[in-house]
Image 1 (cartoon, rainbow, N blue to C red):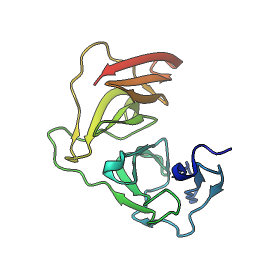
Image 2 (cartoon, rainbow, N blue to C red; image 1 turned 30 degrees about the horizontal axis):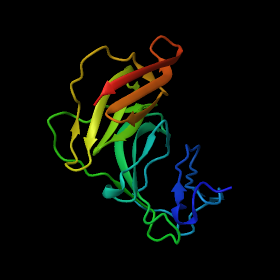
Image 3 (cartoon, rainbow, N blue to C red; image 1 turned 180 degrees about the vertical axis):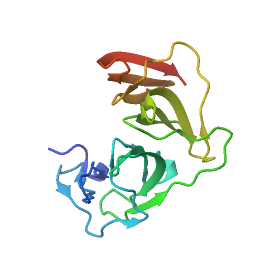
Image 4 (cartoon, rainbow, N blue to C red; image 1 turned 30 degrees about the vertical axis):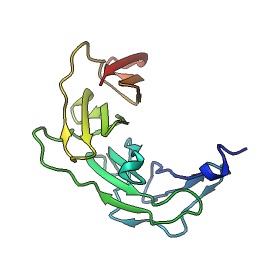
Length: 199
């Protein structure tokens, strides 16, 4: 069984965690649930092998693209680099080139988020939003957003009770809210709590 009408079927790219020097970019068709590997290969400035990164689909008005942030590289170091992966037209018949590039950023008042892995990332309006993760000095509960129009990183001021520091959690946006769930906390436990930030 497919996931939608024929005219809505798309090819969805997935970047898997890697071991050794192998890098794979399989895709799955949402119409047939069939795995394939792009025949034309990948182009551009590819990221290093890593795990613990995030992949977030951009709103359509910002192109058919995915942002990849952070993670732990094969050499063991954490990173805070931001890549853009343009996938062309995903609907059948597929057109365009699979193209990696470093996402340009503009000078900002706030520094970019520090390196991390196991964070969460989501889209809120025209912002790419990350929360928490495991940083160089331990677990985090900070929030940063990247303006997709101005290309500026910011660390917004928030109020209320901060969620406990965590990584390997999940997040999503719902209406005006950023919702954080679960993960492994600073207390060494797996959590099942929910924290909501009014954006």
